[in-house]
Length: 317
Ligand SMILES: Cc1cc2nc3c(=O)[nH]c(=O)nc-3n(C[C@H](O)[C@H](O)[C@H](O)COP(=O)(O)OP(=O)(O)OC[C@H]3O[C@@H](n4cnc5c(N)ncnc54)[C@H](O)[C@@H]3O)c2cc1C
Image (tube, rainbow, N blue to C red; front, side):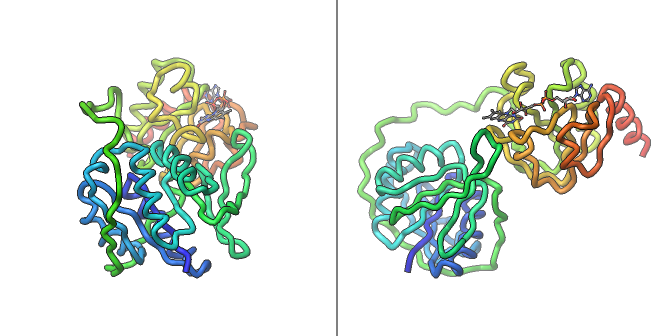
């Protein structure tokens, strides 16, 4: 019976993949396993079982105490070679994407990164990913015996299935010490934000041309406890925001309950990051802006006039 092996350095993403894999497993006649690697790995097995894993491979090998991509690829390669693993699903985090290529090389496997959906079609696991700068979706099937696919975080829901049980396999990995050594850790400079978890999100686009206007947008955000994100230009070109706040194809994928776009045209490279929002609201001067095609509540107008009115209204409630 073939096996779907899941690994991600971020637990939440790994749980999402395990959850969804347990559905695929039924359709593919497969089992689901997860790899828990590094310090504290043994303590994670029950979590994986509760999301539907049948088996958890555990290794707390000293070479896995820090993330070095070559060592983790070797570890996952040995695990994948030891069982009946056909599919390796990784989280498409920065680390996961790098891991995917290295692991695929070790397994002689085809690899797909940044999948934004997976589905079983005619007995195959089909990966969908954006192509041509986000203008189209390519559906891809890997034909090699083993297949490596990295999937964007938040593509699936992590659905607990109650206290599960499964097999814990303590793997005896043959790993050399990593070729790099961590000599120091420092908090990343700049603001730290997790837009992927934001319940309320306001994004700022190129239509907001005066940096001083961010003050009123921050005030609005404060009134509804929203995080602030942005399109590419305010982060990459104007450097008003850190890249952590860029939303879209090259940025974060978010699923807020409410997403408000301010001065954003609605190009697909941005909107792929917010399409899963429950409610989308838009403020734009151009009534023909693409953004309105996916908007639930829209205001055609200059944000400099609209935002203060929204603030006034919210304060009066
Ligand atoms: C490979 C690739 C990857 C990319 N990845 C990303 C990504 O991850 N995220 C991302 O955002 N972009 C990304 N882009 C860029 C993307 O294609 C768009 O260029 C970008 O999203 C447009 O940003 P915008 O909507 O802020 O600006 P614009 O398209 O210039 O739109 C500005 C909008 O503001 C409105 N406006 C102007 N004045 C006002 C006003 N006073 N009040 C209200 N509205 C006003 C205008 O009507 C217009 O609709 C990527 C591009 C490529 C090629």
